[in-house]
Image (cartoon, rainbow, N blue to C red; front, side, top):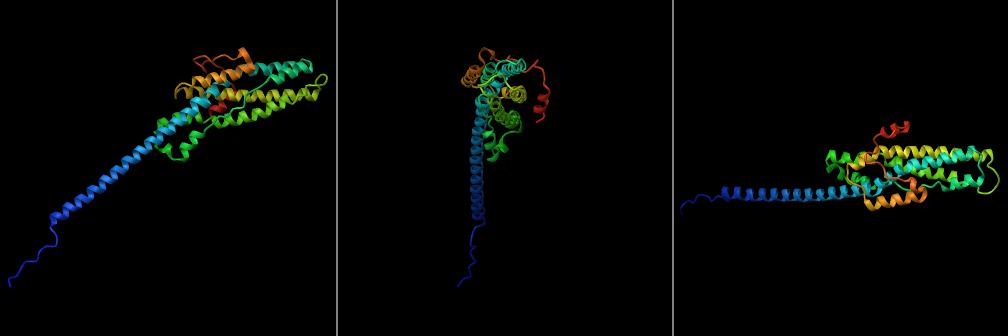
Length: 249
């Protein structure tokens, strides 16, 4: 029986072909997976930026603009209360002034920013773009805290009894103490507005309807004293000692 050469179990060219097919399939799968992940992150980043922009331009921004408009009116009302107390005006006159001092309680939110940070979306936003959002957000927690404390100080001011004769010395000191606490609150809120409004403008215009709502709310308490800010605000606005504190935060 003639000898037969052993038949190779596999042709090496088939091995190369099959390996190439497997490697190609893996690469295609990896590229497809990467493309899907990139698309998903692009969508997440777009959604996060939309949320942050809405929070800043629809919510926080118009509220901060309102505080800047209210600043001189609040200062004027506090001056009127102090003058009335020091002039020993009647209880009715002083009560009318203290009762007219109102500031709507508002929050200055950072919900969208926190969502972007905790979900790791922020790491996929360019550093320059993230800086545009982080800068105006930086002062929001302090504004929110001051706004909450301000409501407590307003309650102190409103604690004056409407009945009785002239204010006692203790009542007068109570009113003046509340006036100065509120003056500090107002100064800080204005300082925050002076610092943050230019940063917010870099993101786009404020929501027009929301701006009107904030303006109407302010005018409910301060009437025609409420005026739109100059287009170049805060240029040529005197810098208070407390403004430096806000800018360093």
